[in-house]
Length: 370
Image 1 (cartoon, one colour):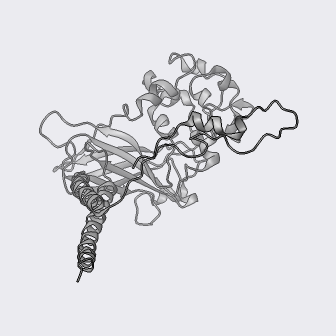
Image 2 (cartoon, one colour):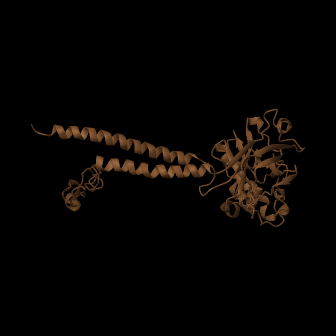
Image 3 (tube, rainbow, N blue to C red):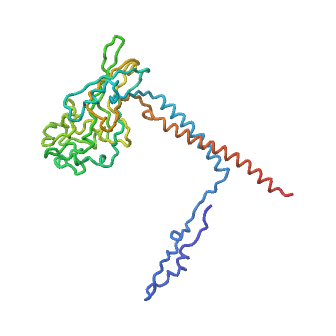
């Protein structure tokens, strides 16, 4: 329903405040101007909710949301996923000795092998993730502990990092590159996957390490100082992060396009997670050109170079293999949410329809004259 129209100019002319204010001793009124906006007389429309409009809305929402939810849920369930914990917290875990004896100060490498079986073959591209639990990357001081100018290749920030990086700003008088707590805690386990064929031979699965980071991160946010040539000279005068085994210009010396600040493992880690249990993309297993499954069913061995201790903060580490669909990775929540909302709306529609039918008949009977 539209509000009645009015003439704002006529009201303004009749408003006492429109008189001559030039007189001496006239006190200015605090009353708002007599306009449609300030007096809240603008034209308005108010919906009138009736059974004829509310009931169809509930049924339409239910009939739309339920099929969408079923489609999303079925699509999510069709995604194959396998997860294995290799923390080494239990004595029967192959990585138990590494987990107990390894620390950030350890110099010797510790390697363990975890055997597992895939019951179903994995088709198409397979994505390998590493997962961490009880690791709070969303802590405010942790999130702020970085220097984006330094990561973007700014030479002044390279030699004089931001104070937000404290206490990982300088080491032995030299600026740390990259500085901050996020970079200092970089995940550095090395994972290798082998398939055991029928003859018991170990066949290494090729893992692709490029293409795992966001394009904008790789080409916009992260840059090496002075380009990608001769990074040893570019990072001269800086120190490696405290917990790193090697400097940033040795992250991938065989590939200049994946070394230094533009190393994709480093870029993926620098995008902090919102929850304490998270996963990050580690490698991609590309689909084979033939009809052979990317990962056939059978036995596999995961070789782990154990470099990342987590037992000190009661954390857990795991490796995840997963396929994807048009909606991304496996996540049944969205489908369940659509089905739940659609079912509630449809149920409320039925209940309100019964109530309306029952009480509407009573009102009609009461209106009949004797």
